[in-house]
Image 1 (cartoon, one colour):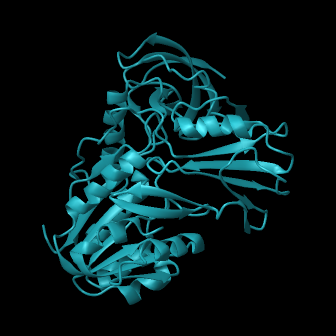
Image 2 (cartoon, one colour):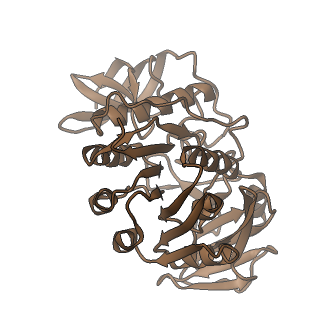
Image 3 (cartoon, one colour):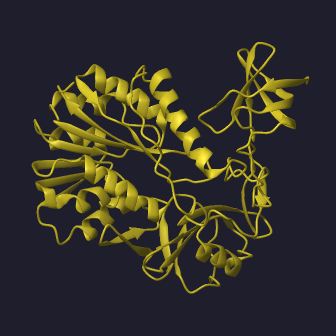
Length: 406
């Protein structure tokens, strides 16, 4: 493949820098907008090329030395080579670009990203591939290969210590998920594979998941607890919880800020273990949470046992939402990366939901859904990105929408 010189001009949603080669857009991992670089074209497509950075002719002033020895080989981070303040600016640009390009909302207001004072050692959940040797690895950068690692710099130190104790894992284990309660000090291991281990070399909650998805507690009850928003939360091995506890507090505060001070009904779709529904229940006469994941809805019911005006509906948002909504109610939705989808958005509009607070981990699907809601009569408020995932290109956003208000 050819070698070309290109001036990098922008950043792509996946974290690659964008340049141009032979009239085609070039996606360049590990580049920074503004740099003049020499590229090796690795793969050519009809409308763009994938390229590798072979030489930096004019480096960006935002380029820094990545502290992790695995950076560039491990796929866990994309941006350790970029000054953190610049990372936040680039994330804001990615959100604004998605609103204009995908959502056709060029005038959408995107606020500065809420970052961290210490953007290292913050992940409370880390997923490893287990090599045949029993050692732990991450997926390689832009590859399905594996990179064995000793320590991850974006992971909570207690989980790095736990990984050392676990290695090597016994034959039959193919994947290991390590989680911790940052404020509780509790730790949990989820092991996946074709044979459960006879024992685990650590005194922690441990759960085994077989190839059919069945869970078996090997030690303890298979749950951990965390403190967030002044409450104690039960989180089972199979349940989702925000991976950055400190920024989850920020996210919760941003959702709270956008809700009305009081109201009759709050509906929390994709409610998980009940984090938003229960944290914000005091403002509403009634609260309904909807969740399809069995372990998460069970956790939510445990977490909400002391809140009689909060009830949870077990099922998909698509199947349960219409029966839960009432005209003028308030709604929170925090869907998976795929977004809400047309049926859910139509149900919101048909029920005449008064206010929607949308929490998203994917600017592209958020932009798509906001465009649909705008066409259905909702005014889109200012978007607030929150940096839940420092050193990566991933972005969380919060935005409020109001009905029939321009």
